[in-house]
Length: 106
Image (cartoon, rainbow, N blue to C red; front, top):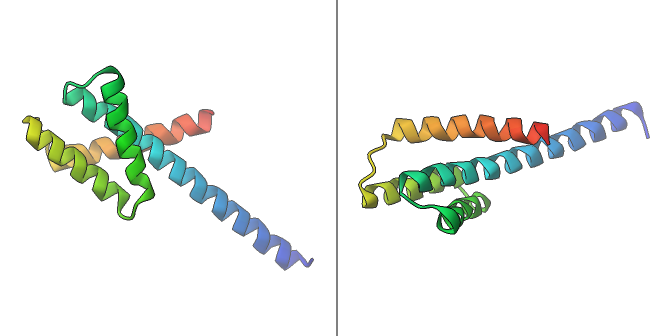
């Protein structure tokens, strides 16, 4: 195998690894976001966990972030929880950074 082939294979492996980490971070972010939203909705214990896990399941679909936001927006509207779209997106972004940090720590 040539040096060029080795470099190409290395880049491909790194890309796959980075994509896997991104997927895991987004799934963890969705869980954290679900727990945050569940708290705002007055859910606790197993009910809050189930709510968070439902948002993690959305990660496997197309437009996952929008689906998660739409689900929480709808639930907040139905429950009368006042949160702006900006606040929801900011929380989602903050929790992604938290999830990435948690993954780095192991």
